[in-house]
Length: 112
Length: 112
Image (cartoon, rainbow over all chains, first blue to last red; front, side, top):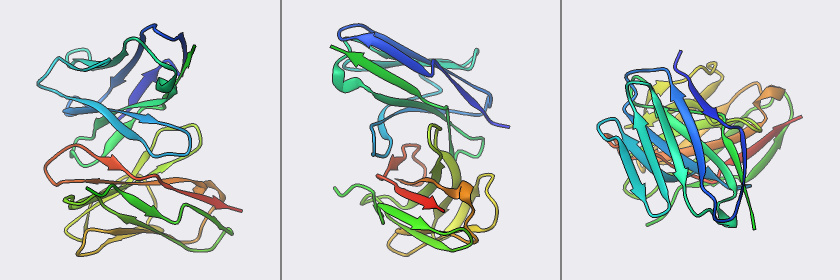
């Protein structure tokens, strides 16, 4: 079935360092790849997304890259700050385009 | 612009009981999706509603059912509650034809 794998499960960095989270997806029909940030006790917040016809997208300190051939996509956060500490989820659309299939999440800890 | 709201925030039920969770979509959105998020996991798609009809369903049994109302708000009903139903239930709203899904804060359901 449709599957999204996410690595690493935990990531600890020093303030100012970069963080990279990687995902792979199984369904070649997936065409939309969002990233969500979830803080404790809150719902997931959409922080950036990318569509299959684009290879890279950047928004200030965050960027996402997509390799459709390899079915890989990655989140890059530069100049990390303590407030970036949260659980990050990658997702991909299912074949019907109705549902998001999520990875298991990455807990990012940024220490000052 | 009003975001996605959910009620109640927390709920404790006994095994075998029934529960109804509610969601109001973001203004301008006509599609509602429900997800179940177990502790330490990514959200899992339950179903989606558009024009008051189910428009896609994940791998959940029929005791999970839903409704969408003319104002686009939605309910999730779960019958014959089991211990494994304990989770955070998330509602996400979107506009038909657009991929972006915006999540509410969730309802934490505990089944004892």
